[in-house]
Image (cartoon, rainbow, N blue to C red):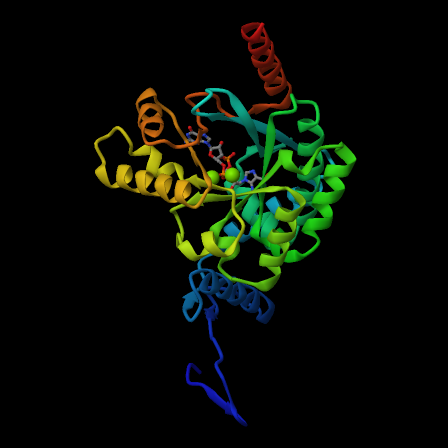
Length: 325
Ligand code: C2E
Ligand code: MG
Ligand code: MG
């Protein structure tokens, strides 16, 4: 199967994955065998295609769990089970909060709180990420409109949403509904979103940038870290992945070298840098000394509910005007 087929002048390459179920152990009826072979096929594909897998009973349990979570997820938006938390980003020169990142939280009545790492991929696979993401943008812009004017809001954009089309319109609508200037919105895009190198993604990001929306490249350093993304797309900021920050201060010279060169790279390209996941005083001292523009992490504040962030921002604003007076 792996050999190309000649179709006139074209070569067609057919990829094959195989799922295997064996009677009678994996099922006594044709229906049952096919269903289980299909589950094994699903695993073969998710293990990287071009493979074969025998059915195992735990595949069925995993699939049932996934289907159940998917069903819960379909109801989550209408049932109002989502909530946005916000985490401050602090400028390291002024030591002031300059933005907050909106982070999605899902509290299910039965499952309890489900981490985004678990449900965001599921929402992406099912396309549910698009309506969810529209809700996030509206909600985040509305919330930011209540903050002091100099504070921006950062929203994570899924690669699926970037490629689904309609993102520019969604952003424009959310900004207009909230009365928020585009310059106060920052969109965080991961590198994986850019792997396809599509014209549409470039045009979408360019249009957003032309509107005045700021663009940040999220988790930089974890995937392909292709420098061509930085040249090709209009990014304003690089977010240095927290795996590099975690190693700072533990005498890991490689991480320090990476943080240092990403910071210089950002500076010479005219882009700001954010250190993600700063947890200790020591890590803070290192990123400060390296000239990173902003930091975000538990050391300053974990993500918090909207009301707590509002109080924190108001408090900071009062202190600012008191010290200015
Ligand atoms: P991200 O965009 O890189 O978000 C930063 C993650 O690091 C958040 O995890 C945050 O809680 C965590 N974090 C912040 N400071 C620290 C720290 O000092 N130490 C440690 N260990 N972690 C820290 P969270 O909220 O679990 O989100 C995980 C990922 O899920 C996000 O990574 C983002 O890729 C995705 N995600 C979250 N909310 C959304 C959303 O609204 N839309 C989309 N598309 N993806 C989202
Ligand atoms: Mg992010
Ligand atoms: Mg990140």
